[in-house]
Image (tube, rainbow over the protein chains, first blue to last red):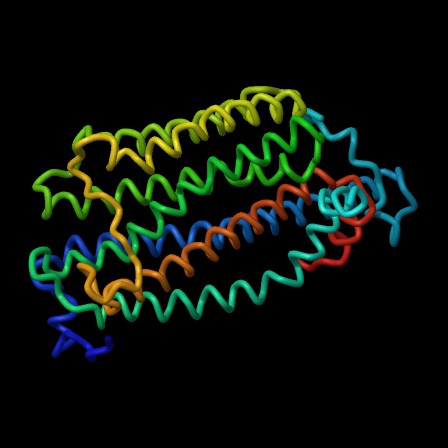
Length: 84
Length: 248
């Protein structure tokens, strides 16, 4: 079942017979696909947290909540552009 | 039973449970993906007809078959949304649509790149390829529908309905290669039969890749759902606590 590496050199491996373009394009697309779907959610999460922290701070400054420690409990319902 | 059901539907419960499981899932996926990719690229023997384009299958087949899981998942979540109005179900459905569109697109692209040297064409309008393209457009339709409706409740209901209708396409994709005379080959019997067309050196790495890509699907779905939970529950105390604690 396991008969060893089928290529005898790195160059041969990269050439994939005559199909270097096809094989490596597919694996490239796959790599992008993995990266985007694992990395993008992290970026979005960080953006959301940053946005909420800024909002909480702003609310604290305008004196809506007890400034300081409880800033995050400030109500964010007055932010424009919300549909809920 | 009902207590369990309502607990399962609680976004907070899901968020906390997934926090615990996510690292293990990621480790599992990384190991399976590494083993699967190295095996497929380095160890699988050259096909006597197709040469090394057989490497493409180890990406194309897992991605394509898992893309079919998306609509049944969204339809199931849609039924739960319509019948029990469970919030979590709609969050999962919303997160699944773009991921499913990605899977379908990658399946179509990798299939075309394989088709070019093997069939001599990037694309044919045969039943398998056309129904797969339809699935892509249906998913884009679900995403567009949600962004077009302003009320979240109405959007959830409309998307649930479209997902249930769209799921009809899944058996059509699956059996298209049997019902019609397609250029696309029918599914290969991946049983342990030693006398079969393909030996274990062909299908064991494929099986590993299917497991790896499946866990990738689950991980990206969990990540997207967790973000959706944070956004929708941002006014609840537990999300505010997370926001306050986290350093970005």
